[in-house]
Image 1: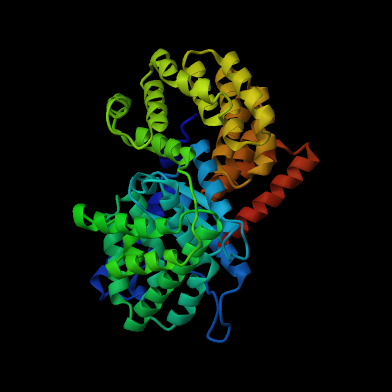
Image 2: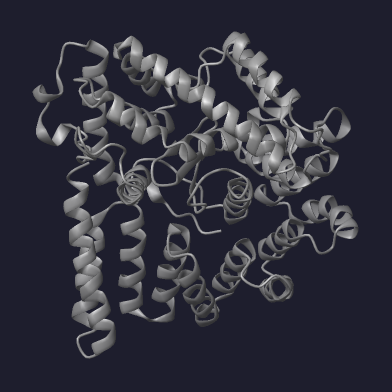
Length: 498
């Protein structure tokens, strides 16, 4: 897959916002610098979400804030462009949301490329998952227990309730939390830990007790959601134990524990709640272990090191033999050894020839060998059986792109962009494809959408203006781009309030 190179493209905005977050964090740490003393451009300013008489924040306002927050977050952190991983996480969240009390089941998921264990929920139905969560959770039910817990926070509207409880506080607790999530995802967690700890320490005792009540409520709702979805409710207690062990044996606790403190009592309470649930017979998920293998391959410093690790696992102890073999095949592909990769992967294909995860890996081997037509045929056949599948669609578009079939890739991605309008990776690849297919107006339109989703509104506006100028003889396209430019100007004004 094409490298999105998000870090280099977003650096100007990253520098501006990170300066504000750093200044905010320092103010929280020192405790003596009030928000008013910070320069206007060096503060995160959250919009007015209600007054003393308005009660809870409206759902519509939460949704708007969540979407703007997501754009700001994407502009600051390295997010995943792995379509297979993104699809897996989205489907897991969706499946759990169907069994949760969440009113609006549509949740936007952002997967953060970071090997620390963290997950978070933001008002308006936004959930973030660090790839490191896969490294800590030993099975899918443990992973799902964290997702269900975050859905519990969203369903009980803890964010809005905490704002109402803290509206008279002089400490920007909410801004500190949001800033710390960005810092934790970009600075390895140390800066985020400091900012988050200072924020919590500065809060009043009754606010901390309210926070503990939120956690207890989210535990209860999350365990109920696990049980209703057919998963093992005991997994919540198991995951808490994993977290508690992390505090004992690691240099610092996982970021997740900064907002979700774990104690022996909390583990016992989780187990007690789970014991009250009906017995559930669950089976270990192969897909989870396959996604975990993908992340573990990328977590190694080099493909060669990943090859050695998975070879050792296949010879000795492993969590799942099939996943270890899959991980070895991926590492061999990354190491430029397609023949070895095929030899490793073939037993998996023989046993499960229609499994899309293996079909995509086989196509990657074809692409590494420059056998583009074979890869395209293989992926098209799989997509015909699963129309609209995100990972297969992106894989096929990439194969067409690599083969120089730019018009075919363009048609595929244009259709897909209408289904996944909020996916930056789709717009990025579409912009690249438009350029090589000769559609310059399309390049500017797709680039604008990509930058909008990443919160870089000045660049989005710049591309839209170029597109408007070039489309002056195409009334329909011209009108669409002009309206989109108005949308961007509005977003830019709203972003200044954050």
